[in-house]
Length: 328
Ligand code: SF4
Image (cartoon, rainbow, N blue to C red; front, side, top):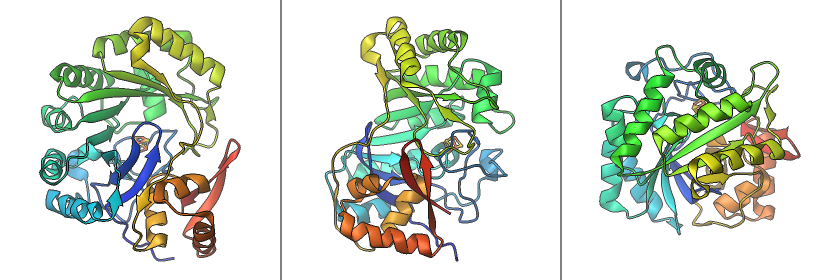
């Protein structure tokens, strides 16, 4: 199969946190399935042999005018978008034009802007100033201990947890964007886990210090990069959320459990197969999630999925009780 260039703007994706969210990828490098300076054991994009070591190493940074033009085009086709979200197959802060892109989108759209980041570069002033332009920043933090952080996020060399914590605290202190810290809990005999009492207590100390607007407690739901990884059971997740409640305040903590968000997008379709591929490329999806995100019906979608599977573009893989489609 020849790999085709995916579009930079994709979706909308229907998510519990962001509602209907139009996604933006700011690195376009068809030779790599993800462009990130982490290689998280839970990554839904799979593992890659080479992670990006520094901003200077990035291949395929998209320019701000390209993104703004893309958003202009999509705005004509989509109604009722809740967020425009920088995410996709890359770490958005690796593109130095992120701040310009946010400024450019603001000129043509009043839809709130979200950046989903792995937090790796929040220690840099320029990156924090770009992030501060968004309405919402969703930032990852899995542990307050260096060893656990390295085992789970597998960062490029030179990325230090202390810098991340200080960067997130500074971003929170700036107060221009809403800051949500996403804490992904995992369990693995091979890679360890971040759910012990000492991990939770240390995380609570650090979250108190960062003082974000919101903390999300969640575990894996989609097929992870490392197949030995297990989701944390609901009982333990509830205990963790309840402990964070007691330390951070009930209104700040949100427990995210498995489940598919109800709802449906309204979109004028141009090429259904491309739209489905672009969605699954960024996030493995169950059939119901594709239907809800792209506003399709089962009769239209099933032949498209079957054809893509037959042509070797996608595969179906099981996680828990759900079958997901992901790009090959
Ligand atoms: S989960 Fe996000 S931060 Fe981690 S490797 Fe995948 S894309 Fe990068």
